[in-house]
Image 1 (cartoon, rainbow, N blue to C red):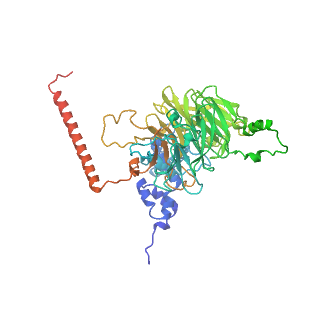
Image 2 (tube, rainbow, N blue to C red):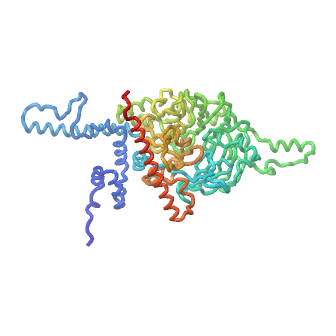
Image 3 (cartoon, rainbow, N blue to C red):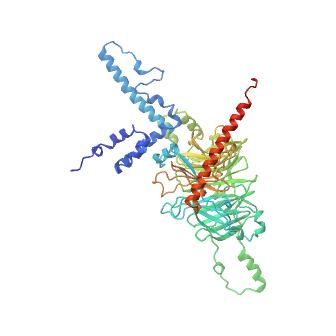
Length: 622
């Protein structure tokens, strides 16, 4: 008879209580024992409590973890309360009552602190096991394969000029990165590793594909660049398998399944930015001094289907009718009082992800965030004064109040007040980043719906938070939502994760350099020696929500692509994608040479230190 496993007969509550006393490493190993323990070890409230214990609030809540003693409102420990009489039995009874009261108070207070800290909203799905990994797990930087010239060496890499994510199918966890290259071609990488090696190139078009789309000669390629300092020059529609590239004053649409140009739409001015393509709304294109609504979903019917000729037309009128056939109405246009839009954002509906509203927000080299309503375009609906120069926008379909956020950060709200604050109907949050007086600026705006006006929104000025002190000492370049946190990149090469209050830092990571450093340098630690992430994208997919630790961050440095993941494994680099043709003897000789060079470098450094020490001997003290 098989030996009976006593653990499987214990209630889940008892097992979960035992798991609370284990370390994180032990809990991870315990998940491998059985499906029952896997389910219990992934308990969402358990990992939420561990996230709270490892957060910056740990020092504030340490009081409630020090045993059964409790300090009341007057600062007097309850265990020191003197009994009325000196009878030992009565004294013991009072001590028992105080201990029980202290335990209940401690639990209520811990529950209130958890409610103040919890960044999630009602109805929002959160996997706290994934959240704990991304908050506390090791961070590693991976670098994608670099495209090469057809007849060049491995050192002749082609620069990447923008990036957008492409999900070809709603079924399966497939995700690709689409980018235009410096030679006018289009390149596609595998982000998840579903079809090839993770980070490898899946396909690449012929050079000059985007240039020939609008009959640009190769002589003019040096004067026309895909990248003009703007990071929003690529947009992808997943359902239509179409990508849009801003090339000068032309908007080029490319079919991603065949890598062929579909249409080329010229604009009067240089295209600076565009919104994310979505099949439910037109594409918003921002030129140097204006905005356009480009409805790429409306295809042009064949000429024989456009009108029926009933009567014969005289030859004199045929030229005029040919002009009418070729005529197209201009797209809706909104002029900008100040030039230089850098980011266009379509906001979601309140409480719903992936359901776009009619609100369009534009930020750039002007001091305000412009608000448009698609139904009333091109009339401007309102503006949010920033005072800074913003370059990236994102949003949350949940409410935000600067007063409540500040009180929650100080742990001063009750559970009822927190619940009321999070259940504000029609509330949404706009998050922006940029520069203010040479420092980074992280700004959060609360939007709410006006009663009786449907989806129209107005700005509540008491719901504005601007972190210009602790965000960064350099300009912020890009901001996105990552799990239950906000992550942004700055000009020093850091990625910083913040709580949704915009002030509490969770962690930070420096992406480093794409080139491998074989020898240490005196200039390696100097500012500006590392790459910077100019654009961030979350790799989360609906199919990957149930996969542990599947939400990485794709970034673009202006020249290449990288991926920040949360793993203890070593990251991959461009050299890992190069086929190694060296023999084992050559590899061993190369490793021996590197070892000898490192030893000689250390010996010379030690000798230089000794020489400097001897030179200073005998000198008078200053």
